[in-house]
Image (cartoon, rainbow, N blue to C red; front, top):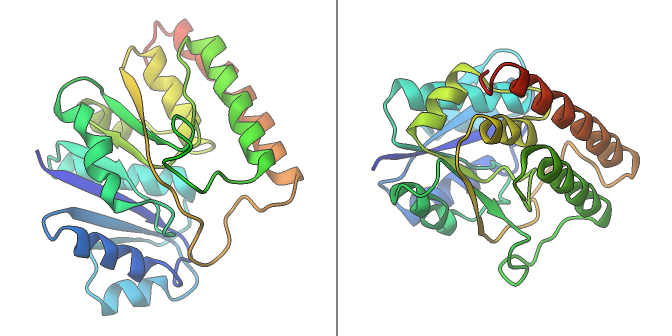
Length: 240
């Protein structure tokens, strides 16, 4: 099966080259595409000068729009598996095989790499407020979709061909990871989780800062979106 890593990048001049080199060092047969999401720093210059396979978005679309661009690329180029992979150094490329294994075996449509199934697997567990927020989102998804997802905001996710096609056509832009998970669950797709290692950012600043209000505000809005989405999808008969 041919696999594509989708790497969204916004102002990742400090990290993107190292991230791509780690992928190439791990396997020269692993394809990847960087989606430069309207960066205003030197990200585009670094990608161009180093002949890194990438798509330049003229305007910043946000993580949802950038990732969907990657899924469109995967769909148009007939990839069997697409894996979202952060450009900031948080994801460990050695777990690519692990997150794609269940898809190769036909046991899952999507596999989410989680920090919380086996805490020994990942030393980096994020801040307390973000863990609390993730637990609340987990509970909300369980209540409205009947499935426990331990790491609902994880951006380390593998998708099979059916999901690639679905996401190439329809992908949420506000809170893409939890909302797209809800969409798949309501539509009857099989989602599994596997424990993975995640690291702290190698450089730059996360869009969700360590301040209390921003992750708390994010969590409340995600919960509301999950409730609305789950009801909306069911009213449409489980179809988008």
